[in-house]
Length: 209
Ligand SMILES: CC(C)(COP(=O)(O)OP(=O)(O)OC[C@H]1O[C@@H](n2cnc3c(N)ncnc32)[C@H](O)[C@@H]1OP(=O)(O)O)[C@@H](O)C(=O)NCCC(=O)NCCS
Image 1 (cartoon, rainbow, N blue to C red):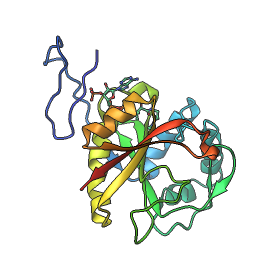
Image 2 (cartoon, helix red, strand yellow):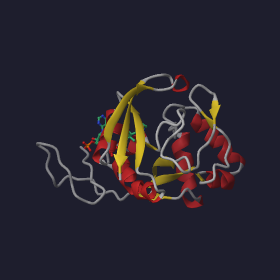
Image 3 (spheres, rainbow, N blue to C red):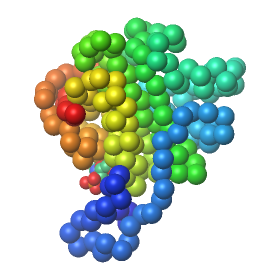
Image 4 (tube, rainbow, N blue to C red):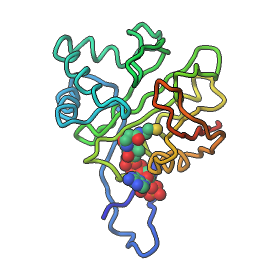
């Protein structure tokens, strides 16, 4: 049985669970870089995709890493949006926003969290489903990693000058919703994703600073 730890170290228990049985795994956010790449590749090879709506993103990334690992790493941090257009789940492509990804690391690669923004405004174009997105590899879930990763990246978003960040989840994605509400997010809208994303019913959250 696993227990989550809050990012500030406080422990959280559920009714009837004994507070001593907590996970003490240390997880930090790291910049994508060479020492972590082999573990990242291993996660992709095990079938994990950094894009939960596009399983084929794993194969795309393995090919890019094989072609030019340094370029792949450099492209994870793209504050000027110099990279190629973004591929949407229906295969169409859209304008890339400035942004970057950080990797969750506990001695092995655990997951990814990305932050993107539109310079000078808090608004996002319709094809960008939120300022922040995250994914944890299936074998490291329910350790509190996504909750802590989101807490760790929020100060960066605040420094960018944004009054709030938006995040969206499928209405059925309870785990993601708990990650967001644990970090102060509240629902501002129920909507259907654009057709390019399959149109599923979704929730839009905001975390105000
Ligand atoms: C959503 C996701 C990132 C959560 O990662 P995680 O590291 O397991 O999350 P945490 O351990 O921080 O758990 C957060 C909460 O969700 C709960 N949770 C985790 N998995 C759950 C599940 N399958 N069903 C219900 N609740 C779940 C945890 O118990 C925890 O709740 P608590 O704080 O009340 O104890 C992970 O499940 C994932 O990568 N899913 C696929 C990608 C995805 O959906 N990304 C988000 C897109 S918006």
